[in-house]
Image (cartoon, rainbow, N blue to C red; front, side, top):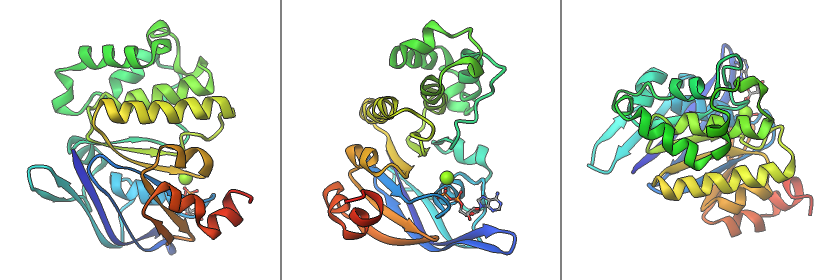
Length: 243
Ligand SMILES: Nc1ncnc2c1ncn2[C@@H]1O[C@H](COP(=O)(O)OP(=O)(O)O)[C@@H](O)[C@H]1O
Ligand SMILES: [Mg+2]
């Protein structure tokens, strides 16, 4: 297992600053929710960890169980995947004209996982039977919920220790959201993952989160030590839970 430590990260696009000194950490084996409504910087932060967006200040470290601290800033997304961190991107980003199985294979490029493609495919089909039944179907012809499951399964093909999940609930009917969220919890336990999940669906996210952060305009507005503390927070009640 692994721990992610983000400290004072600033990032943006061109002259637009989006993150203004964000500090968050995800301990080994935790599920941490990064909560915030649209446009507050959730994806930017996740993409900074993945090496897709490069921070202009601050540090991002991966601390491994064998005591190493690895600096992630400046690494390419491929290098970050090699280190055992995997992303389920916002909007799923599948290849719609490739089959389910081909999409899964594309998740397996991490060198340590390449040797175990068959076993990992089998694991995917066990975890998500529908993917096995539809392995030759084009990804783009699957339903929204199935596509989200495929995106999660693809991310697991690299055998990550850390899973970053960016808004898995987007575009899904409520019943499917519940199913996807429950599946993330189940997989986390089975594969001993450390999970950081960006969500704007507070009710769903706090079902599986050990604790969480609320990000507002690129700042951490509230850091909660437990899911209960999140649910009881006045700001959350007022703006996000509609209480
Ligand atoms: N590629 C990009 N180029 C320019 N601005 C961007 C880009 N991606 C996101 N932004 C801007 O950064 C801000 C934060 O976006 P984002 O991190 O996607 O928020 P969230 O994931 O919380 O919805 C928004 O104002 C958004 O318009
Ligand atoms: Mg986003």
